[in-house]
Every structure is written in C-alpha cells, then in structure tokens.
Length: 223
Image (cartoon, rainbow, N blue to C red; front, side, top):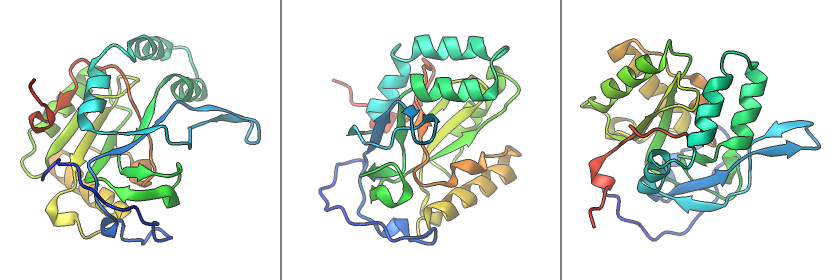
C-alpha cells in the first residue's frame, strides 16, 4: 500500500454507524488533538475535540520513541498501585497528547471525519504485565495477514497498541465492521481479546514513551 501523499478534497461523512467510511477520500495522514482539559459544562476532564494539526506514521513513531512523553509515562506507572481508575483516566487526559488514527477530522466526533486514513488502531488492555504486553507486540508484528504500521506498549504499561493497515479482505466495510472483523481474527489466531470500545471511528490514542515502539520500515526515510 503506497504511503505517498494524495491530493484530495474533503467531503462530509455520511451520518450513522452504517456509513461506508471507505468511500471517503483517502490520505496517509491523521489528526493530532493534543491533550484534554476541564469542561465546565460536563464538570469533568474531557478529551480535546479541536484538531491541532495533521501528522503521519513517521511523526507518531518518532514522538513515541523520543523522550517527549517519558516523564508522564513513568509518573502514570508509578501511580498504578495507589490511584483510582478515575484518577488514572484524568491524568492521561491532561498529560498525554492524543491522535485519531482513522483519518483527518474537522472536529473530534464521528461526523467530524472528513478524510479516511488506511489505518485502524487496535487496543489490547488489562494485560498481566508489561512483559506480556511486549510479547503480544512481537506476536502481532510477525503476523503475515495484517500489515503493522506501528506497535507499542500503552501508557500504563499493561496494554498494547497495534496500528494496522486495513487489509484488502475487509476494506469494503464500515469502520466498526473492520474493527470487529480484525478483532475476531486476532481472537481466533492468538486467543487475545481486543478492547471493543475502540470501534468508535473518532477513538483517540494516547501517545506514550516507548523506546521499543515498532515502526514499519517502509515508513522510515534514511537521510
């Protein structure tokens, strides 16, 4: 699948979960939303819904490998034994930048998707340890039927994030159908459960520090 940037015109996303997102114009970029904030109306911390810029796989991979998110990643993992789930969630929202892998958004909700990327980010959460997360990372990277774009351990260290290029055998599906199909495939092949909450097309992925993040070599340009 080519990663050459394509010139295209954005169009509105059809409404409803049955919308065929695959009919949208294609791009190899996706939206960076940054960090969350306190919402006065909701009286809680919420993710950002305002796009900051569009980025690509090399940019995200470089971000994760760099030490940009190292302090907050280490702090979050130190909090694991004492903080509540709500405290951990709030910390991630406030301290970690986030991107939406599905494509370019004009706003941070499903109807805000204007240009679809070829990527889906699959989450594997609540694992036994970082060691298990790393083992799953290596297993997923070696898969011969689904091409990995990025793969890294999650901010808390107990999960794995697998960014894949949508395989040809499920391209003519909605985003939710693609996510469900890939989840079933992973469950059948490896007996690992995929987090079902990631099936929302506007799902954000927090960017942690992981010096062992895998980046598909085809995205790496040697200067």
